[in-house]
Image 1: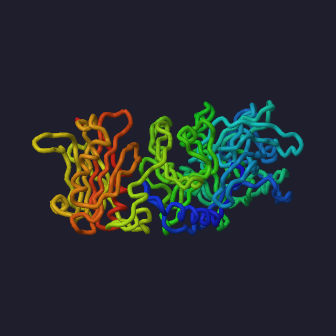
Image 2: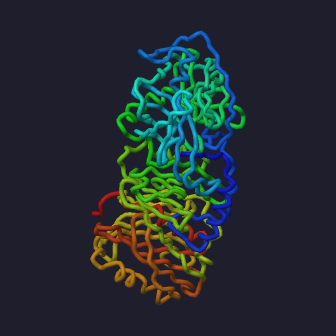
Image 3: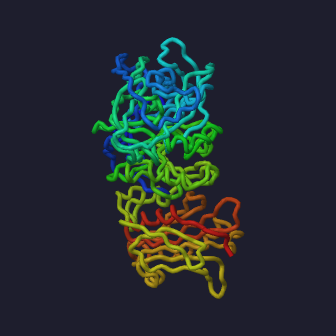
Length: 558
């Protein structure tokens, strides 16, 4: 990415406007009800806008080479030789930043370094991904600009491999092969503040294994050091006094510590990058955002790589990826959970994804490597009245905790309020006939079945009623509601890979209770799903949407 900012004040303003716009929509995902006041992250990516001041601190030193150098033939063997192998990179593109909004044709500068004489170079993912093109200056050369292309990248390891064009037999750096311990002398090389003047800063390793979870990466092997760095140092090498690479610089924090991706992690994924593969990536350049007060958390997408799984699914710059595989992301303010999901799956696996789209005030869901994103239509989006209150604006009312449950056959699963301890499920029978598989949850299922005062849910899946059709089956199931409640008319619904219709009945049995009936089906699969909810309050209504979000058919129906 061209420009990255550590501050998040603009995000709070954007989400405040978004929250107001979304307050009229109940949906398949949790909807925020207040504006976040997101704090700045504890560490910041070191990318510098290309319009930065031209002055930058410089220092160089020579020292006795340390043990552990495993330089390949032709690699730099002195500190002075590191300059010729270090490059400045400018990426230009259009990005949507959570602090400043959309930036058209924006450019930012970072650093990198050659790893072989053919012009292969390492830098950070956040320096280059999502850019329209790259410019490169080699070894402090201020005049001759070269182009480069991205061969492979890793969002979670914050690494990218690029091929610099029009070069041959360039100086390059080898990898340090000795132990990385606290106290190891190191130097940060690069082009701080976007200045074309090469700079070198001395320090020591202060921690050999630091926490790698940040707002824009989740790196498994990180080195903490105190060699001074500034914006523009991102992607530059951290080297020993004999010019061997210990790590790839990527961040600094307010306490004065600096961080580098360990060469252990680089070497682990480098073969895949060289083969043109992305690693632990879906093709976005983003950062984690979180605000507990509003319930908004996820990965803010600044740019999207064309042709990537994210692009093919329909993810756009400015989206917030709120869920991946039904897990709410960035609840701790980092990309940790997001990256653990990616590391736990193969690159081509189908993963469910949900995004919050600021530009259209919509929640969309779909799949990576599967279904494209479509708008989620939550139950109650345009309803008013009854026990659920203003169903389009739940005011944040919800149960404190949910638990996943399955039926006895392990065919159906869903998350229900933890307080709903009476849970049943198995064969779904109508009269003497088994029609499918069903699952119930309530504080008291018997009272839920036989009256209006108890909240709860039934969800069933059936092949038998697939031929009946959604409209006819909903009409059949709604007959009891029309006889005992005030109907509101049928509404379209979609979410979680299903689409169908629902109806909300108010003032049931002369009480303030609501009854919600929904019939839906997946595309091209011969079964239908029936949901029945009884709602006594706003939080019961919110629970209905949560159940719909998390409902799964785990295996083919009998």
